[in-house]
Image (cartoon, rainbow over all chains, first blue to last red):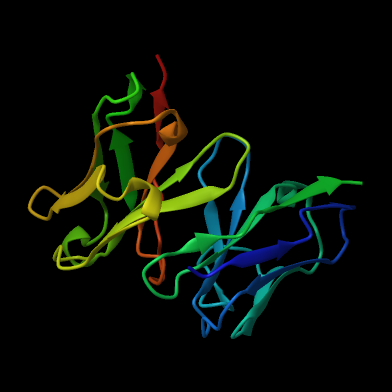
Length: 107
Length: 117
C-alpha cells in the first residue's frame, strides 16, 4: 500500500495568513491526489482533485500543486471559515489512502 | 442536485451483521464508480471498499476482506455494504462516496455503526 505523510499535524494561524500543508507519498502517484476540508460533525468536502484542479464552487484562495510524490495545499489568505481539518487522499491504484490530517487553528 | 443518502446504521453486538444502503440521485449512478469510506471519531477517514460502475471490479481494505461485501443496483440507483462478523474496531461513521477521480466526488452525510455488547 502507498503510505502518506502529511505535515504539519496542526498549525496556528491568523486571518489573512498564507497557509501551506504538504503530503508526501511512499511511491509516485502521478497527480492522483485530492485535498479535503472537514469541519466537526460534517462529511469531508473536496477542495482540489488531480493535485491542482479546483473543485467547482471552492474559493480561488485554495490551490494545489505537485506531482509524483510531493504535493502541497496552499490557502493564500486564511479566512475565518477556513479553520478546519484538512486531509490529502491518494487514489492511484486499488487502495486509496488518506493522510493523517492537519488541524488549522486560530492563533 | 447531486445527493447520496446512507441508511442502515445502528447498534449491533460483536459478531453481528448490518447492511448499509446508499440512495443516489442527481447524477448518472449507473456510470459512476463508488466507494465506502469510514471514519472513527477523532481520526482521519479510511477507505473501505470500491465497486466499479458495472460491478466488474471490487476492492476492499485488508481489515474487512472476507467480512464485508459491496454491491450495487443500477436500476434502483443504490449502493450497499453487507457487513458480517462485526468487531468493535468497525465502529465508525460510514460514508457513501462517489469516484475519487471524477470532477464531482459526492459524499453522503454518513450513517453511524456502533459495535458493542
